[in-house]
View 1 (cartoon, rainbow, N blue to C red):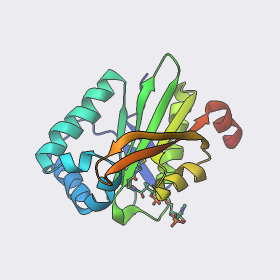
View 2 (view 1 turned 90 degrees about the vertical axis):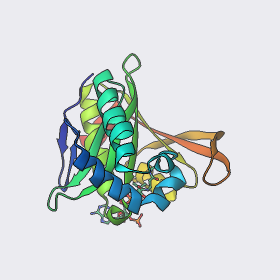
View 3 (view 1 turned 180 degrees about the horizontal axis):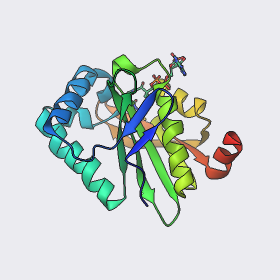
Length: 193
Ligand SMILES: CC(C)(COP(=O)(O)OP(=O)(O)OC[C@H]1O[C@@H](n2cnc3c(N)ncnc32)[C@H](O)[C@@H]1OP(=O)(O)O)[C@@H](O)C(=O)NCCC(=O)NCCS
């Protein structure tokens, strides 16, 4: 499966960095560093991202490049169309071509939250994924991650259940409970009719 390197919607554009530069790594690192306290609450990777070099080697060359080439994850940087500012990231990961399923993961910088950019990004990416042949998209979030729960709900995802204490949460020092939300292609088709 392949996805387009650029996906546009009303206010934002999702861009896969085709030739990642160190300058881009520096820009992304500055945003991550500024939003570090929020991001590390929900992800383990901010604590492993301590320099633009880390961002370049692990994220840009690893996650974005290698996994795109393998077809296992499609990572995009979210840009504001008007200001060209980087708002965050969204990706289609855990791509299972046999079962036609995938998962959407995302984050925004602190400055970019509260404007509906993530709902717009989820709708843009899911539309392309469903149109490309994916049948089921999952969003997973910590049951305490209220902003992420709201994104899944507002985007019309159905709560399938909670994976109880499925992972150790280093930041909060407790086991994490994870919501599993999904949307099916048939549901997306009904919504977009
Ligand atoms: C999860 C996360 C992406 C949600 O960001 P968000 O800004 O709340 O979500 P959206 O971009 O969809 O914006 C929705 C908010 O914008 C508001 N909004 C303002 N203008 C809007 C518009 N034009 N359209 C829609 N919503 C708008 C909504 O009212 C809502 O605010 P509220 O929840 O206070 O009512 C963000 O909090 C984040 O990155 N957190 C850290 C990382 C993380 O947890 N990632 C997910 C891991 S599973």
